[in-house]
Length: 451
Image 1 (cartoon, rainbow, N blue to C red):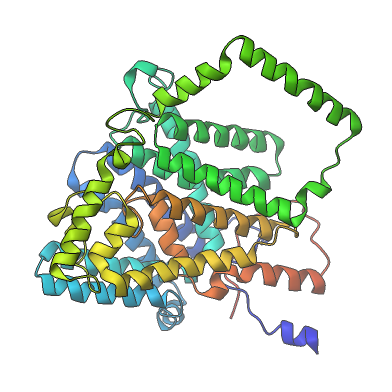
Image 2 (image 1 turned 180 degrees about the vertical axis):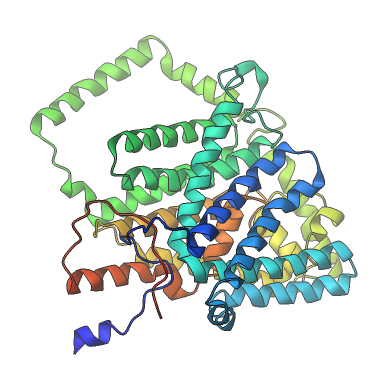
């Protein structure tokens, strides 16, 4: 009876990790490839000076939703269009009303476009599932890092050219923000890859991605990635990961002997002082423009202007409408301040609450004690959300669709609880009912399971 009650639970769309590929072009495959192209063009748009290129990723994203509507199950998709992301959609509608009262045509158009993004995200999530969205995001991340290494090869080791831009027109902070979003998924792909040469290639690519984040000079993205790694390490220590690592006595002796030798070498050759000077100069920790005493490169003064306008007009609850910050204040490099300024406390709390909901569900679903594919998958997404939350302290991409990182998080916000974290339960039930498959490889293809 207990097993019968457990089998009543249905897996979300695209939740299967071990579904075999038939080699045929299906609607789910086509949507996934198109979505990967959308993530890729969301970065490559900065290579084109035309303002029309900014809407190319949005057009491709909308095309993905149109593909779903062309499928055989379009009636079911439309009927369940509001089964996930309810807080987000309510906040979008509320923000659109506020934007309409501001009588700013650009603000109203931005809100309408945001509603279209939500509807398309819901259709995509229902059709291919969150795991396939993450796979498409990872594919775009691998291609983006390779493209940056290729386009920025001339300035990669040139320390006289200033901050690294990857040979693109993108700002170094934006480049680092996008790379920080790709970093956890590339590591995850390297962990799950079964072919040895691909595993080593992805591991090297993840190291290169971290190096690119460092040489961009963006302290926010670098701190966010390190904080996510620290949080992962703490969870691993608390769950007993270190107890499973077998350390022999000779390893302990070698480490104890190596520590004083390394310290003596660094002190004798003044390596520690040189390292500190290098970090101070490269990250501009003491300069007047970008130093620690510069108010986060002048950001705090912009935030103060935004707070004064909110207080003067008493718009704490409603805000000024979408993209009003660019028109009234300027560039607000803080996603939370910009969210408060444009959406107010009501819609802002709904949006932030939907993000915290995703974070909590992923934290609860990622069980470090269970070393399986689903646990590692949820742990990766949990780290991804940490990078997203912390990076937006000094970036303005918290709630927008202008970068692949933001588009990926918006898809997570548009998923219901079952669509977001249902896969692990389905896998454990199937493991109890059936013997493990003979194929050793685990893939993330996953056609849609029937409800």
